[in-house]
Length: 287
Image (tube, rainbow, N blue to C red):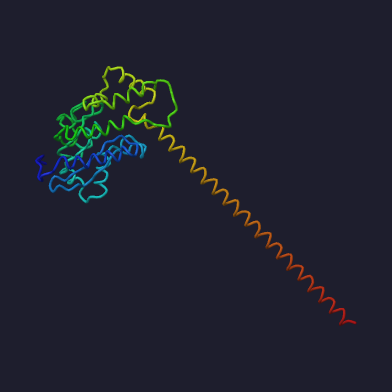
């Protein structure tokens, strides 16, 4: 399959769509990465998605994987379509997603900011054009398209403060880090992705990463925990309501049974009276 673009595609327009997807991810407590798959033959947007790793409780549900899922679910000839798709994504695809794009025979990927931790398109590994890999086909990459906007979303993500978090040791310099982020240029924001940064502020971030288990999700875990607690609370309340309803139903059933028993007793009394009357009549006839 040729890598030549067959239709004139507005790259910035498509990146705007990918950035909107990243903003959706930001607002739903996900890592803010969004992507759009475009058919290079006619310019049609065939899939769009953003990270759902938190919602779906799995680290594999990156934006690119979910977009591929959509195409397989909705299109008649997904393999042919994917081999003609250009992928626009706000951040360089990770090693896993780059491998998936190769398997799908994607001809070209356009992305915003680089991924210094897990990038599979040249930053950490060059999965996209490694001829030694027996994995699908290689593809071209174009980086730094609307990079500033993509980094801006990550900046918002890292600046978030969870108001419900209890105070804990090792968090004394949070205000300093926020100030650093507010004043940071695009270059400084990119440095936040580097694992070998030696500044004191980033050393503190690394220490906090060890305590929280994950730098990216650490700032959001309190919110997620509160959401889970609220869900459990709502479930418990619903269970209590159901139990109360069941108790009320049981009481109603008992009342019905008692009423039936009373009616049966009354009928028995009436029968007895009738028998007594009949006996009296018989006695009278004998006399």
